[in-house]
Image 1: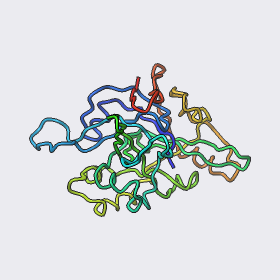
Image 2: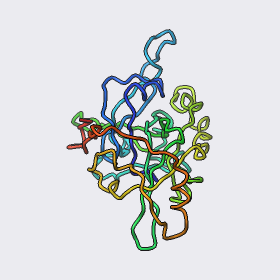
Image 3: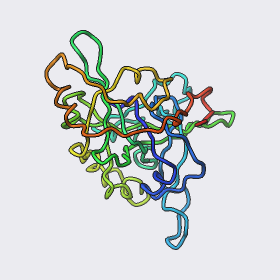
Image 4: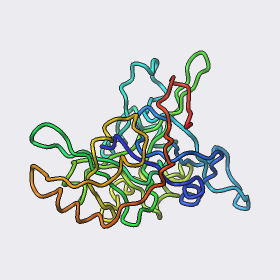
Length: 273
């Protein structure tokens, strides 16, 4: 599963990575949690001429927590921040989004927890070896109320974990390879049957993992040291030691990078500041 991630890249870095039009700047965020606003990259609503100077894709803010458009009361819908890729094509809740509203969710890293015998779980930070921007496979849906209110929502698709993640958790987010981004986002020309292979092709071999402190457990903790590497003794086996050695370097963060998106004050509000 994926219940926490970070986006510590600049607006221009994200825009360049996904050829996306991003209207407003945003702060670095190191501890993004469900129900908070998240940035997603999507295909434009209208056809974009190939001679246009505008980037190929759009980026919008949505609530992290998928709500199907057909549900009558969103407050009664369970918080759905992950969707299993193995069954997404046959679940009524997700078939419309899989056909019409596939998105990419940019990240620079994410967190997974490894269960320990004493009951506590040890969190780990996961990122690409070269610290490149990650693109999670996501689905987006817009729920509309009778009174005219709308909520844009999204969730991250997950798959069976591969090494090195399999040593920590049995699930991991689906990461879309760069060569597959256009096909994943192009819902006009590619039907679900044409993109299901992407969900089985996560580049887990390009990831590195290291343990972090339990500060990440607090969804309201916004600071960059939440991802600081620590040394641990794994109580199950030597996983912690081996994963410690795999992380050769830790990204240095500026001390003033201390803004993070607020949890939604109400279901219609999206505010990163």
